[in-house]
Length: 417
Image 1 (cartoon, rainbow, N blue to C red):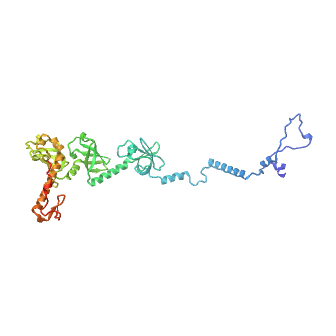
Image 2 (cartoon, rainbow, N blue to C red):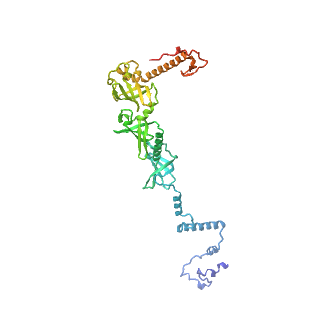
Image 3 (cartoon, one colour):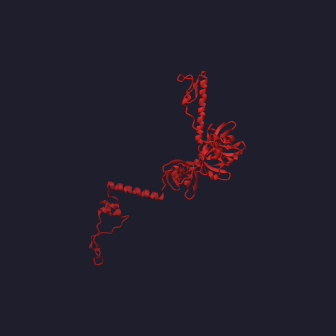
C-alpha cells in the first residue's frame, strides 16, 4: 500500500533496516530471543488518521470538542461574547429598585411570623423585618393580634436599617399613628363625643386613650371631683379641646362632653351630679359642665332650715331636671320629686337615689296625663275649634269617628305613686 510506504513516515518515525541475510541477524548467544512484534495495518491507519468513524462516533467526537472548548473559555474568559455584564446587572437593579430611604412607604408581603415580629418580602435586595412593637399602635403580645399573618399584603414604612446584615426595619405603627391624628382632627371638627379609657394620671389631670393616642384631661375639665386613682380603668365621655400633631398635644374635656349629653335631656330626666357649693337658698350642683340650682324648697317635702345637715360640697346625688334655660345655661333641679315618702332625702337619701328612675317615670306619667286632660278640656268646652285628640293625645283636626262632645276620659288609669 502506498500509504504505508516508508517514506511517508520518514519525517517523524525511524524504522530499523530489514534484511533477509543471515549475517544481519544478531547472534542468539548475545541477544535473548523475543517474540516478534506484530504491527497491524489498523494501528497504522489510526495513527495516520485514515480510520473511518461511524456517524454516532463523529457526533460524540464533535460534542466532546465543543465541551472542551466551552470549558476552556469559561476558565479563561467567562464574559467573552456576553452583552449583559455584571456591571449592567447592578445598574439595572439600581435603576428599577424602590426608594429605600427612611420614611419611604413600600408594599410588602408577610412571609412568616414569630414571637418577635414578622419577616416581610418587599422585593428588595435585602430582607425586611417588622418588629412586634412596630406592628400596631396598641400594645400587643403577638403580631397575630393585629391581624398580621403569612400572605398578608400591606403597606409599610421604612424606619431604619440594620448595619449587621443590611436588612430594613419596617413599621405599621407609624402609618396608624398618622391616621389616628387625622381621625382626631376630623372628630374635633365635627364636635363629636368619644369614649376614652383612663390609664394614668398626675397632679394636673388624667391620661386617657382615644383612637389609640394618649390624651390629657385636666382636672378642671373633669365633671366629677374624683381623684386620678379613682378614675384609672374607667371610661369617660370626652370632647376634643386641642389636637396638635406636630407637638403631640392632645387635650380632652369630660366636662364639655357631659354638658353635651345633659343638654339633650328634657324635663323630668334624672341626671347624676356633684354638689359644688352651698348657699342659704339652695345648693349648686354640677351636672356635667352645667351648674344647676337645687333650691332648698326642692330638696325634700319636709322643711329644711340648714342645708348643710343634708348636703355637703363634693357629694354625689341624683337630681331631676325641672326646667332648662339653654340660652342662659340655667337649670332648676329637684330631689323632692324623687322621694317615694316625704322626708326620705333627710332620713334615707340612698333610698331616694335607688328609686330615682322609678319615681321620675311616675312623675313623667302624671305630667303626660295632666296634659291630656288639659287638651280634652279644650275640646269639651270649645268644640267649635274643630280640633280633637288622636290616639297619642296630640291635637289634630276633628274626624267623624269621634263624638262632637269630645273624648270619654273615664278609662284613663290613675297615676301610680
